[in-house]
Amino acid sequence: MNTSRKYTVLGTSLVLALLLWGAWGCTKKMSGVNNNQVIETPYTLFFADSAGGLYKTNDAKTVQTLFKADGFPSKAICVSGTNLLWVKNVSIYISTNNGVNFNHTFDSAGYYPSAACNGFPLDLNQSMALDVPAWNRVYFVSTEGPATNNYMGVRYSLYDGAPGTWYTDGRPDTNGAAGQYGSAPYTISITSLTQLTNGVLCGYDTWNNRNFYKTPDILWKETTANPDSASSSFSGYSGIGNRSLWAGVCLPHNTTRAATIDTSARYSIGHYNNRLIAIDNKNCNGNGAYYSDDTGRNWAQYQGLPKKPLLCIASPFEEVCLIGTDSAGLYMLNNNTGLWQPNNNGLGSGLIVRNIAFKQNTYKDGSILKYVFLATNKGIYMSTDVGANWTLAIPGNFINVY
Image 1 (cartoon, rainbow, N blue to C red):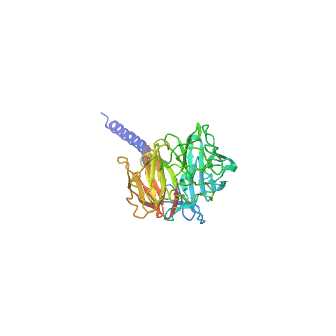
Image 2 (image 1 turned 180 degrees about the vertical axis):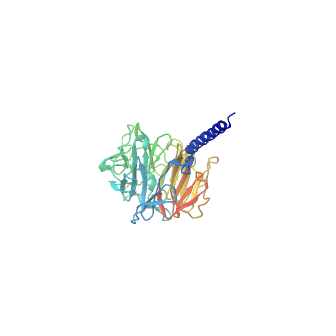
Image 3 (image 1 turned 60 degrees about the vertical axis):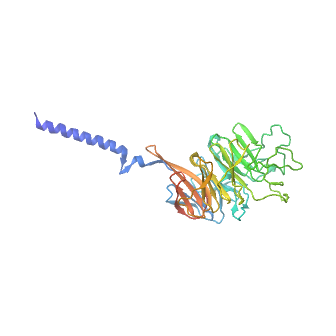
């Protein structure tokens, strides 16, 4: 046997094996980086502070300043397509280059300054804006009245918020009921928006405690009951009852409100899967939150929430439902008991939770890592276990997170 040939074949085999291993290894690593841990689709988190600054991060560590603080707090942040939309006061500004530059795109964004029972300032903030990609629309509540035929108090854009592309969401479907919606001063002023997982868009008018819904195929329709199922009627108005939380009449943008109005309630809406949820942003007397499983026709009151203003609601990945409060931190819905319970692991005490957002990173190996973020008076908090535990990521006093 030729030993030189034997070692040549063996050497060739070893070289081939090393080459194959190296080729396979290159699919796993490049320049010492494990490709299975390389982020293919990273998240971008936008957030704004109480001094009016706007920031972004892709890792909750490195922060880029997009807009320096100017003393005017942010009201809402929204991304539509590749455009970043930002509300300050009553104006919406747009950035088409990821926050490098901003231009004015629309005035008369919804701005309803109020105060909670303890004096905490309320503006409803993030629930005033909603991107609906499936409909190719982005919605914002608006203070415009009937003079511009905007009877719903809602504006939308078909072109990701571009200037000159804002339209009024016109009068609702009256179902043939004469005078059902009427005209000024009984126009509708939707102040809060959410979309159920079945695609139904819901809008709520906190001034008159009236709730509405629509789909791409129908105009806005009003449901026949509201969170506390109280009814109201007053002279000169014919229409569906069960509209108002108040003992008297609350006319939007009108100073002649009845003296008997109970101003302790101010609702905004969110959802959990197909459940519509109304939270009382203003009251300290136990109004708490109500839920409806039929788009607002019938409501029941949740239990377990503190007697504190409820400032925000979100359902990250539709896996959990969270409510942020004024000075009582965060609450999570227990799906087994149907009760709300404190969920402040890592948050400390006395926290003001103003907004909630959730993001995810998709890796090259197909794995997904989910994050939930809170905008609070002490900083941006982050959870990597869908809200069970929290760590402080970015210190500061923040209003919005998106």
